[in-house]
Image 1 (cartoon, rainbow over the protein chains, first blue to last red):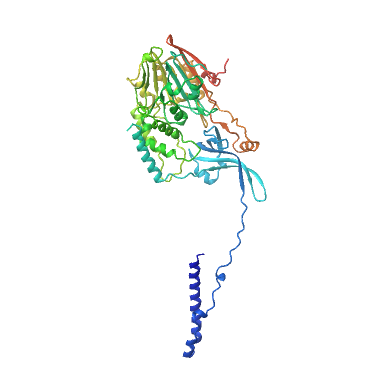
Image 2: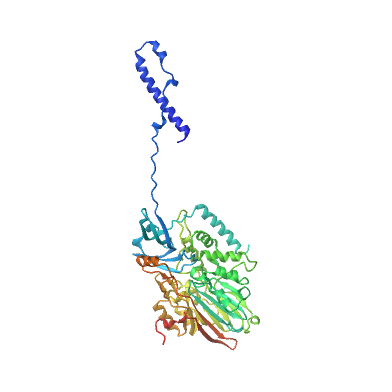
Length: 176
Length: 376
């Protein structure tokens, strides 16, 4: 926590304690003689506050074991069509660093997560990876996972820039 | 491989893998390229690979490059082709140079993804290539109905015949319809980026008529027919300004599909028993030409040839056993996206026999009728 905040809290607590103490003292001295008022303890005589009592010691965070995934094969693809049970897609082989779609698949919709199903539409882009996942304790399992890429959305600035570029190019292409 | 003689007209159609491409020799070393496709085995544009095989230098030999439309099954690698053909003019539909379409090009070119953006990236490469040229090569020629976009005088043709290339489409209404459809592609603010989805039917396909003396060749691009007489093939057939004559070679539109078929084109614009050439299109579950399409085209002419069979096989890539097993368990199989690329080549008999065509088929190409009737 920030030092000044600690001090603020300490000061507030100190003052609260002092006020309470003073209130208690006033009760005690309430029926006392006037001379006792001059014996009231000053601020400097109060016990310092132990801040460690205000803030419990940090609990030691136990580091969770992160499972690792190593891909044997990876594709990027886009959706060609969607039917009742499957979607067709074209694939680019990323493992072989290809630039064009050379393969196609029909993927079962049942294998998609609920969030990926929401992203499913014509032209949607996804990654498909096959590989091994190593979990805590050394377990190894072969998995296939499809993830629809939540690509950045088109921003207003981007769209405006593109419109401006389009107008410039439309003029350039007629040679002006 | 030997190239054509100086007085021979040649038409070579390549496809698919990925797309289709036509390369035409007009005469005397003057070439024309319509569209582009990538040879999936080499990764290079088929037109450039072909020119290399017959020792033709595209920088000097190609006079005109036409992009019949913007779908990526017709212009893959066109940017590279245009850069190599530095002395060629570029022709496309005017709609592709309008700011509405260009805005879409820039929007979809910024996907930051390995997946290509449905021809948008390629169109951008084409325009960037044009931008690096000097006038007049930097300005595209706009394809309009019945516009002569290229002419080769008889003295320069090698066979003594005048050559011309005329665009027959798109019409004004097709142009307007295209711009309206492009509006549906315009992305909205905060919409998740995705790949552009090509609109169908295709309204801005450039149909090309090539005339060499009395010999005509009709390239149907991907133009689909329409019940509206101002759209599709009907408007071309009905036009009184289009070039006269009937084509002796016909590049069948839209991969032989029924949507690209117009009976009046077969009856009025091409000769009987025309040499018909086409390439297949395989996309998801769609296979063109279908069996019905093959029968229909085969009924029109006995001389129909296709560059490759419209069927794909399982992917032949070698992968670790664990990957193969997982593929089998999840999707069953991964198939090749396209059939292997083939080509059909037609050469005429030169100045002596301009109407006599010799057909040469690559290993994958075959007569169209053989697809439904086994070869004897």
